[in-house]
Amino acid sequence: MSLMSGVTRKLASSTKTGVVISAGKMNKAVKVRIAGQEWNKQIRKFFPSSKTYLVSDPSSSLREGDVVRIASGFRASKRIRHVVTSIVAPFGPPINERPSVPTEEERLKERETARILKDVRQAAKGRRTALLRLKEWKEMGKEIPDLETAMGSASLGDVEVKKGGKAKTS
Image 1 (cartoon, helix red, strand yellow):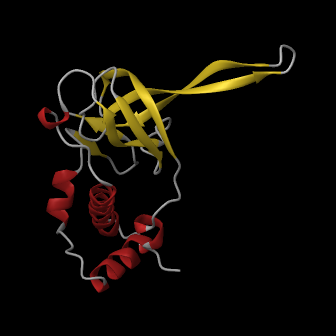
Image 2 (spheres, one colour; image 1 turned 90 degrees about the vertical axis):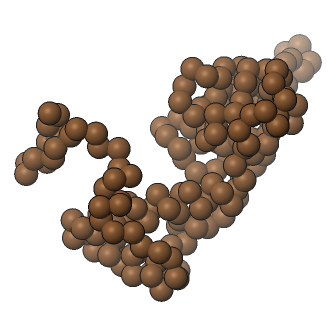
């Protein structure tokens, strides 16, 4: 098993269809409600019950009321573990007037690029695993950026890291 199998592997995912109930309040994230039913043993009847998920919307193309298809996948943050795969029925502006929803290949390519940049930064610190991963990236024929490019894409802002490891804002 190679080191890169953890980054480029295709995860087994389940797809669900739901309605966007909150959009535009979080950066690149929406809240989606999935309809369902729950059986009540005492009454012996199904009752409506729903689940809500925080879903990654990388292109910020969703509006409240859109019916979307979501898939489980890579963890984007502590609570976001699903990603929008398509818009089934738009609510409001038509789909062609919005940014397009990225395909799975585009999402994997973006994740791969971010991983390469992180490995370059970590290799500059002397991390052995990052050095091994960079070696494997080169063998695969991937373009490896220099440290300045990798540091330019990092969102550090005006933070300096001291020798003790604590960050100091200037």
